[in-house]
Picture 1 (cartoon, rainbow, N blue to C red):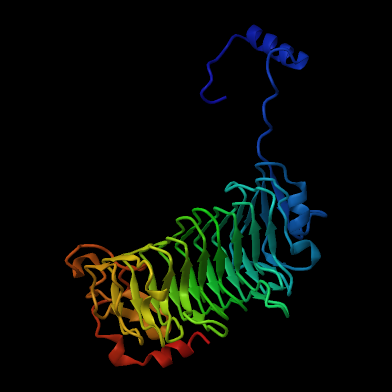
Picture 2 (picture 1 turned 180 degrees about the vertical axis):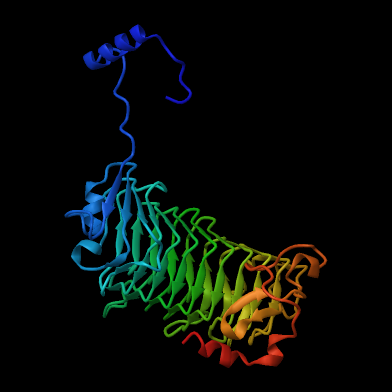
Amino acid sequence: MRGEKRVAPGVVRIIVGAAVAGTLCAPLPCPAATVCVGPSCGDCTTISRGIGRAAEGDTVLVAPGVYTGVENTQIDFRGRNVVLMSEQGPELTVIDASNARAFHFHTGESSASVVDGFTVRDGSTQGEPGAGFLIENASPTIRNCVIEDCFAMWNSYQAHGHGGGVYLSSSSSEISGCTFSNNGASNDGGAIWSDGPAVEIRDCVFVGNHAGNYGGALQFVDAVAPLVSGCVFINNIGAAEVWSFSACVYCLRSPAAIRDCTFAGNVTDDHGGTLCFEDSQGTVYNSIISYTETGRAISVRLGRAAPTVLHCVSFENDGGDDLGSGAVDNLFEDPLFCGVESGDVTLCANSPCLPEGNVWSEAIGACDAGCGSCDSPVVMTSWGTIKALYQ
């Protein structure tokens, strides 16, 4: 074995004999195995069956296809740290929840429990949270997934209706490289709702998610130091049907750190903003907040503790570009997206959000340069035209 010294054959025989007798050494752990799921995997044709056959540390490898029905919904790892991975990525591997919930983690699974490379679609709950993923007292890793058209509805008592795509309670999950599209919640957190400690959301895209109240894309409630980094948010809607102060990202008693993100064309009410902080002295660094419909760039509810906002770009937000009393050293000019009318929020070569375009020599927003120099998109199109592309 690697890293071990070679020993004489006689010594090997003594150790093996002693191990069998149980007097000198414990048995070596078995190597991790790969469990196959798919049409050519014998009777292991469903995801739940594959997970049921996996031991701690195993990988469940899923062949391309559309997986639906009872044994492909309410998927439960049952406390085992297992990697559930698609062979060929989310474009070819779909979990169609068909109005059920797709995943339920609730038995202390750690970050070593992984869901990697699936499209999760059409999840639905009523009176319960988390139509795509319900994660309670567990911290699995979710990466490289597409989560779309999942909806958490409240019941007749307006109970729950949180976290259409993912609901995180007492969880420190990391979600990375995922796309959240057209998920919804009757109440809060159209794509993700979280009260967990140290949740991290990295390099994700949020498009067209919506909530009846707070957090068209994300809501954090009593969350300890959540991090949102390198993400893109386009046309997410906080409707505020019951309350006010809607937002794309809503932080309630949650000092979120929002870094290197791009926000374009998100929709709030006239009291809200793309980002709304309530009793949450968070931070917003190196991010673009642009074209907010109705609301402002950043809203601080009831004038309470404002976030620190540093080296950001705020532009053409209907309710105003002001970044609050905690703002220091920011820009208020066109970020110059390459093709925002087609959903392209990469940057023109002459953008002030590129390191060579600002005095701080820092990259601002989630995207790099994607085209040559260009004129302001404000001249080329209206935001109404842009928004229609995502409806």
